[in-house]
Length: 116
Length: 117
Image 1 (cartoon, each protein chain N blue to C red):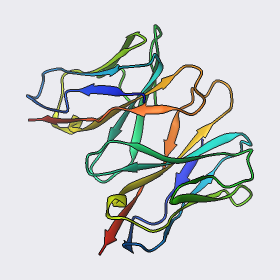
Image 2: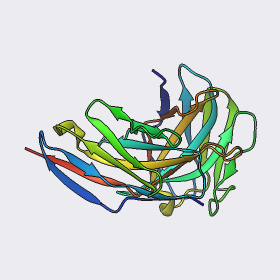
Image 3: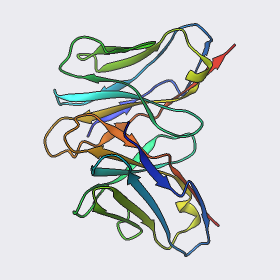
Image 4: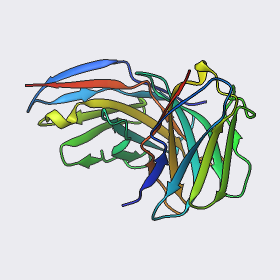
């Protein structure tokens, strides 16, 4: 079945530094990638939607300059948290949708980011 | 904007018993999809079941079935013969079929299901 590989699974970084999270679709072409943030014991909050080769569409309240999303190829999308602060600590999940599939979403295994 | 509400933060069921998780949603659209996702402790999201709004027949996947009431905007999940491996967070999700909505999912707040011996 479809697999999305998300790396790293855990990362600890110092305040003020940047962190990049990668999501790769291993056996399909991810025309659309969704990035979510999940706080402990909470729901998934959509941060942005990206289509391959296009600029990401960010949800209201999400800082575009802080959460940089790149979807340069059909198999790779990245989320870069710039100038990270402790309040950015969270669980980040990507979800890929293959073009032509009406309801198939494949989720990555998530990245736990801790900013110290 | 669509909203998805799960009014049960936590539920508990005994092994082999049946449990129903509730979900309601608010939309003015007529064409959409509804989903139930499971998130075990590993945090990996797993699709449990989906329902197309235009279908009157309730979806079923082995021990999992839904009660889809379109007029009432209700979409409950029934788990039969509960197993220890069913313990997880369950999220109800909505997806619009309106062109231009980017196929994004709107998730409910989740229900944590405990399965006891």
